[in-house]
Every structure is written in structure tokens, then in C-alpha cells.
Image (cartoon, rainbow, N blue to C red; front, side):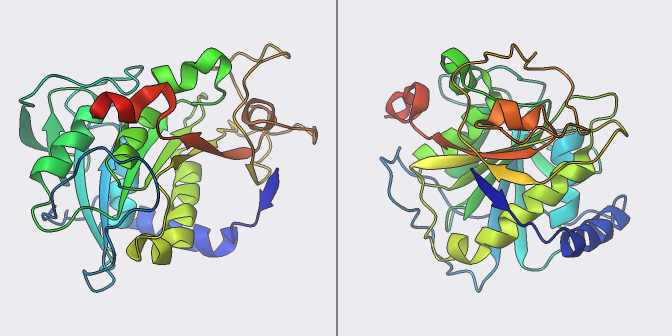
Length: 297
């Protein structure tokens, strides 16, 4: 496992500014470029031809009006170095994995909860990515797809269920199969779902990878999945760990259960053990797990 220094002081200041902007007038969604056929790996070739402005497609599986996607968009939309386009399911499609609908896909203009222009797709999270790449980017594809922040954790891959069930992960894998790097982010269940904590991690990942994303140097063989605990006022998130996804659950953690941010356990060999003991987990998920890429060809 790798312990990650996230420069939280600087990021919390950035997050504070982003939260202060919540409720301000929304910007416009803009347009970008078309998608491509399903890729087999390597690095994305989107490049940085747009003068250093990062083209970001935001999606989720909770629906276009969900609070997690709203938090991400509001944090990113006013940065002149970002071009943010939103394409997400019209309603909640949690648990749909990488499912897709037969064409033609239907969509309508709508907004996020805070009023940012968005495309609502009548379909699954993967459909939202496909629709955006085919219709919302006429000149150049996005540099990155951000899927989330999901309401509820997506940890472990016991019996391969993560790859089959999570719509948040499914949307990210679909993007990578279409040659666009992707991040899936999920906030732990709790009495209060701590989206601000998740936002810190999303911004940290984006800034750490911004230059590589602009240069088209981020691999699409895997996607990154981040799960952030919600501590419910007891303890604090310990730190971020890069760990593999669990393939078994010998301690019988309830996978949608609460997280213990007061834990002192340090032997955490996988994402399930780490997450339920108060760590933010960063895992790598193969894009073609559950044959996501194969099904798109």
C-alpha cells in the first residue's frame, strides 16, 4: 500500500472557496468533441490543444440532480482552466454497472441542483458517457471523465461484484474503454454523507494529474476509484491509501455499513479493510473488467 500526502491544507482552502461559490449564477456548459470506438488500452490521445484548459465531462449514477455531482460541478465550474460539461442519467440508476441501452439514446437539456446546464440522458450512466462523447464534443474529446461523487461507497470486488454493480465505476470504465481517462469517486454512507470530504479528494486527484491529462499521458487500461469515509462527527479521516480492491471479506464487513474513523487499525491490506477503518482508499480497476470494453466493440 502507498500512503499519499494530499496537501490537505492547500486543498481545504481551495474547497472553502469552491463552497463559498455555491449558489452563485451558473456558467454555461459549452461544447467539446466527439468520442471514438472502444479502445484497448495505452494512453489517451486527447492532448492539450485547448491552451491548457482541461475539458472535463462530469457524470454519475445517482441522477443529474443529485448532490454529489452538484458538489463537483460547483467546485470546478468557475475555474477558467476548466471546461465543464455535465451528462448524467435523468433519474437514479444506481446499481446498473456498465449497462447500456440500444440506440438511439434520448436526452434533454436540464440543470444540476444548483442550476448548472446539463444534459439528462434517458438511460444508464454508461449511456450518459456514450451520448456525451458522440454529441457534446464536436471538436475534441474531453481530457477526463469524473464519475461521482456517488452517494455511498463502492469498495471491494468480492465475487467480481464491484465491476458488475456500480454504475459510478461502470461509467468511468466506459469512458476509459472509449479512450478517455476517468475517475470514479464515492462518498461513504453515514448519517450525514460528507460530500465536502469527497470533494477534497476529487480535486486533489485532478490537480495531481492535470498536466498528464492535458498531455494525453494518463493510461486508460485502468480507471481510478476513490472511496472517502463519512465519519459522522466521530474521529477524522486518517489519510489516503493506495490499496488493491478486496476479493474476499473475511471480517464480514457490511459493505454498505458505517466507517470507523476512530479506529487505530494499521494492518489494512485492501480497500475494504482500509475504508472501514477510516482511510480514504484509492484503487485501480481494469477498464475491461466484466468485459466492459469488449461489450462496446
